Image 1: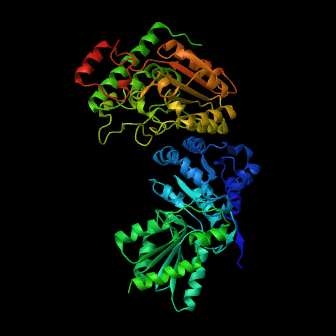
Image 2: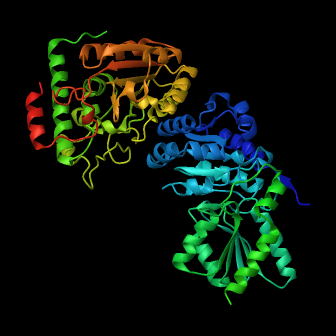
Image 3: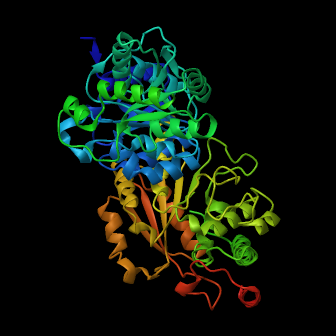
Amino acid sequence: MSKTLAPREAFGKALVQLGAENEDILVLDADCSKATMTSLFQKEFPHRFFNLGIAEADLVGTGAGLALAGKTPFVNAYANFLTGRAWDQIRISVCYANLNVKVIGHNSGTSPGQEGPTHLPLEDITLMRALPRMTVIEPADGVEMAKAVRALGEHEGPAYLRVGRMPTPIVNREAGRFVIGKANVYLEGKDASILACGVMLSKALEAAEELKAEGISVDVINVHTIKPLDSSCILEAASRTGAVVTAEEHTVIGGLGGAVAELLAQNLPVPVRMVGVQDRFGLSAKMPELHEALGLTRENIIKAVKEVISAKK
Amino acid sequence: MVQFVEPQLHELADNCKRMRQWILTTTNKAGSGHPGGSLSAVEVMAVLYMKIMRVDPENPDWDRRDYFFLSKGHAAPVLYAALAERGFFPAEELMTLRQAGSRLHGHPSSECTPGVDISSGSLGQGLSIANGVALAARLKGTEQRAYVLLGDGEIQEGQVWEAAMTSAHYKLDNVCAIVDYNRLQLDGPVDEVKTLGSLRAKWEAFGWNAIEIDGHHLQEIYNSFEKAKEVKGRPTVILAHTVKGKGVSFMENQVGWHGVAPNDEQLEIALKELR
């Protein structure tokens, strides 16, 4: 069993570190600071932490005002409520006004588990990706989360970061570089390319191992930035292998799968399969059970790889 | 507190008259826009921009400025007229309102219009932004104030009340909201569409200092802003009783003039009426 780390824990600690280095970093939360672990920042820098209560729209607007006055606010809430309920505020007060607000969507994907469908953010990437000027990031694990937080501290402009609650396998190397908008190639193969983000990267790597034993060689590429998409990396991979599988803990409609399909359909039409949530709500179950129920599995990635390989013949 | 002497009042009255002319002529030229709720806010905007706010037209992004947020973004014509009066851009540019390539969009854009502090147009968002800059001013230890103009219909939006709680909770005495209380909204009288009940009691219950004034009386408007500056430990809301379409007899208190521009004939009559 590989080592695991909760992305939110890595996030909370990285935010404290960032706050120590840059006093313009402010943290706002909507009554979930213990779950988001922004409570760590609050403890360290109480005068730079603001709880806005259960009011996501006001949370985002207040962040916009702070950014307008030159601060760098990280606004935190559960991903579904933040991106869903406050979408219009993110659209107008943040993106249209082009303000340096970091929108942090917590409890992402299936990580709230037994809370049930209302609490499973499975559409947040789509909502954020549709907004002009928005950068969208989903780190693969806790190690990469820390790098992403650091990168966001230096990034100027609207950005969305997806943070999971439950511990997930660590696949990212401490020394590996993290550049917003630059995908990282973990494995290079010749038969197909697997593009993954978030917790699905670890499953893609497992799938690649199994496929290797069957004599199938695949790319595994960590697309941690869903927007702007690293189109040159993806087009290079697709032209080399001629077949693409995407894997995400999110609806494939407008998510990583949708983004990759948009790119390839217009530039390099090759067979594509999307592993992800297929236009449905979740259910109330533990995270591993949800992955099974929603088809977010290593087996489905393997199946998809075999399908795209046969489709290109 | 400064009492206006006659020449200053004359000046301000002239500002207001020109602003009304611009609101009418620019919406006429554009063939669309929102004259009713722009005309109701003329005096408030004139006092703010000409007498109250510390802004620098030469340096619109001055980081020590007072902020203004037009939360009722559809009243863009009155904001543009006030900015031009204050010298942020040449008044002739007002005639480009809503034209392709113009810096003066149908609703305010902080991206392209000098002096516009935030983009708006989706109602309900301005007070939260005001709280944000007010909190930042407190962190920076500056005396900056944040003003936000809300429509009375607009405060049916829930975010306004979320933000009202935030201002009071954080004791933001550098926030001053003004409600353009003209009692009409797009579909009809506010009290018929969805009643506001006792507006003053609502704001006070939310922890605000409330001042009620005649929103067309320059002296009362000025005094209310000065009083608001003296209130410590809580935000102030100025309930400005106004007349939608103020200054043009056939537009006053008429729901139909919310979002319709005057035609050439109507413009001619309206301009003659302005005092």
